[in-house]
Length: 179
Image (cartoon, rainbow, N blue to C red):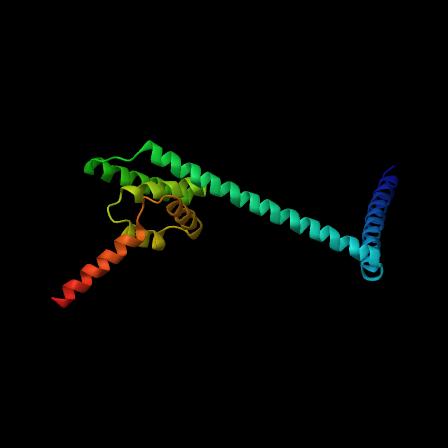
């Protein structure tokens, strides 16, 4: 009885190897056949090109709709933040600023929604007395994707004057040098 077990073991191994060989040969034959058709069959090539164009067009449409959806989400977030209002008291403003910057930084590091993280930085920017300076700090510290979303938020909200603060500071500095 012991003599029959090694024979069965060899038989099973042989069957397993033969099956694997047949599967590998079938896959290789399919690859060779597909390559042959791709190179020699004009209709097959045309169908592959059409299929590729459909996929790329679908991806392009999906990307545009995702971008449009994100812009709408940004617009809604800015509108909601402006409706909620911002603190007026200097002490409350300072605490609010620190809280929003801390929330934004933590959202950047933990991989939260980038729009929510940018919204925190936007809220901090709204209460900061000199937005131009804060934006230059954000340029150095905030990740670029979130900074891009923040730039879109600033573009949506006309109440943040970024360009006016920098030009008046430059003219004051020029007058100080003349005197």
